[in-house]
Length: 508
Ligand code: ME8
Image 1 (tube, rainbow, N blue to C red):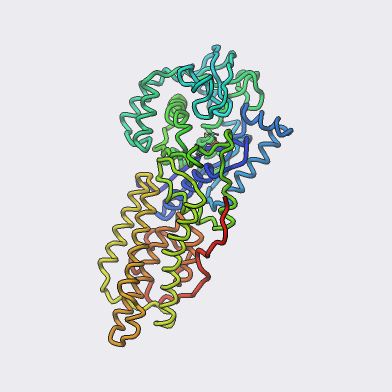
Image 2: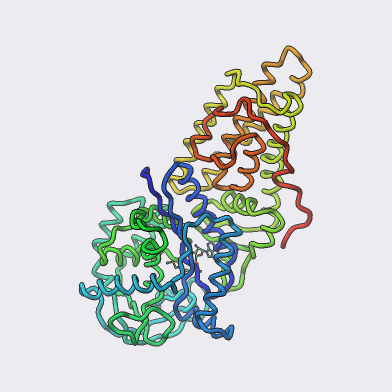
């Protein structure tokens, strides 16, 4: 997956309720990928945004006593603000109420219609509004409830426009066969393939009973099904949100989402693109759920963690680190205040923060604040840095963020061992050990610089502050900067307040 541009997306979030840690999770993971690929010198486009049409939003607006648009404006701004607080470096924030999005969705659907891929039919089925999706009886949970939300479904019957999804079965299977890694991890690839194998029904792509949506261009009495409107955001955004030559980013290299929306992205989305003769995304990376007390966090069930108190108390980098370290990317994982505090104190503060602090203090005390020259005695450590860097790049290429952070943390621990084993405070008392002391201090500064560059996508603010304290330019974070020893000797270090200060009390 090595080329000079990289397009990464999150799902666009529904504006029916406030954002929670589940949304923060996907946005942070996408941001980590975006930053990593920028470190590789690639031309990155990172897209996120909000999904604002459909019955679910119209009902939420009505319940709040607002028009759908003013409700969407308020909630969309909250998702945008969350992105800022998360330090998400997205290049654009799309809203499906953007006029340019609407025009392009209508244009593309017009093409599908003109080609005969869309026809009129009638449909009756069990509809879950929180999912904005129909279910067959067999798919429902007990007592006619949604298998995802557990809430009652409704019988919906209307004359709609249909997309010939069933006609794409063979082409979809051929695509899956030719691209065994286009959906990761593998169990999700298998699950999506099984959905296609087990038969596809044509998809109702319009609604006549709601008006909050994009009008069907050839039948303005109907609005386009919110999922079709939403999926095309990944395409429409490049037309007006990515500068004059936005099309160069197509197709997406990596589309992130949780497993709840696998079918839409791994079955319906590629079929729509095939019908529109648009190149398919290169990879979908499906992550697990962030759980609270063993249950999926969800707006519909109200089982939520608000990210803001954690960010206020511990700082955004603590949340970013915790989520990618604690929850194995691709699997479900539990968010807990205790676990959060334990990783913050045990790893960020005690392992990384203290390491920086000790390094800077020792270089100050023993070498007047200037990093001494390399004596060439720590080749094994230099090799380990190079190996871990390669492992991190491979982990990102395999869409495995947790493995990447683990590999970086191996280096943090190796550096802490170096301090313990070589005890610079003992060497400092022995005039005959000056060269040894130079080596240890150099190795700590060099190793920390490498590890901070490698950790920058995960904890960007803290990594930048720490690099500055080591006398390094914090804006230079290309991966090449992680190469052992470059620009280290002679750098002037400066003590800074603790990177991860002690936190008194903690959010529930
Ligand atoms: O599905 N754990 O929007 P949505 C992990 N608008 N991730 C979670 C999560 C959790 N507990 N809860 C939410 C939609 N997410 C559609 C998408 S895309 C064309 C349209 C994240 O607001 C995760 O990425 O319900 C999940 O797929 C997404 O939010 C669902 O957000």
